[in-house]
Length: 155
Length: 155
Image 1: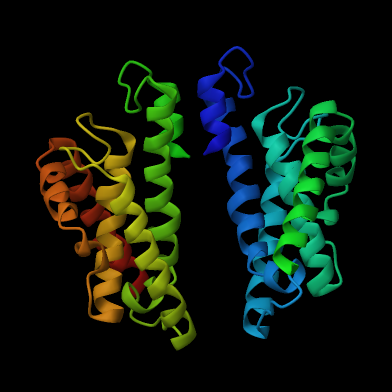
Image 2 (image 1 turned 180 degrees about the vertical axis):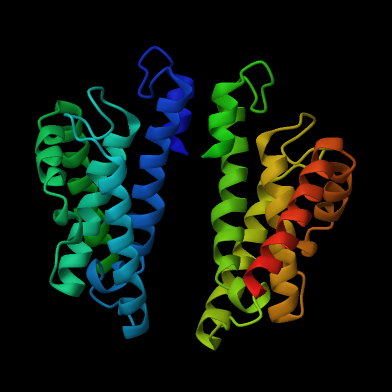
């Protein structure tokens, strides 16, 4: 939603290809990351990112095969050459670098296995993206906000 | 995905507004219908659209409040004047007319209550859209295909 808005609002810095089929492939990658990986993983987050949340065994056993499917879809669609959709930086790179990290953390915590790491290029992609100055700034602001939020909610 | 592709591929027949904020509002409506209404309702479909599927009580009680939230979000965002996002026909009208129908059927079957019908404009919108010739053709082809599929799968 927000990324599509920014794409429409700032056409001078295109982060989607010009060609309709290529645009569709980038959007497909974003949907795989958002809906087939981050969305199922989110059902694990209460037990991972909160000190009081829990996750039932039914949810754990429902989510695990969904994540496997999501990783298979990611592997089929992503190019990682060097960016996730090909040689150009696109919106999908930002979805990937933020969402795959929380999916990794959550799957490691719940199943003892970093599910997205089954695709080795995911780690190389994260390192590539982490060299971007803007990303470093967003991460620093995110860490500071998280700390403030946690202090407030436990105060 | 597919609607966005068609929008990119056939720019001569725009089904998204030109203005970035208005485009975002239409996309938001589409996401509410897709992700907050159709996606949770889909977990009920095995018991509704199949003669052999079942749905657990846990799923039934998880999905019901999600549908209520989705309908509240739809009510907050939709304008229904006369089209769902305002005076112009947009991609969101097609998402609405197809998805809200299956959400209605499924919620009626499982809870004895047509959840989207809590917004009275939904029915008027469906009637408005049903007068479109293309929609009538798509529905006729869909009905024929469904029949062929059912005959094949029970043969």
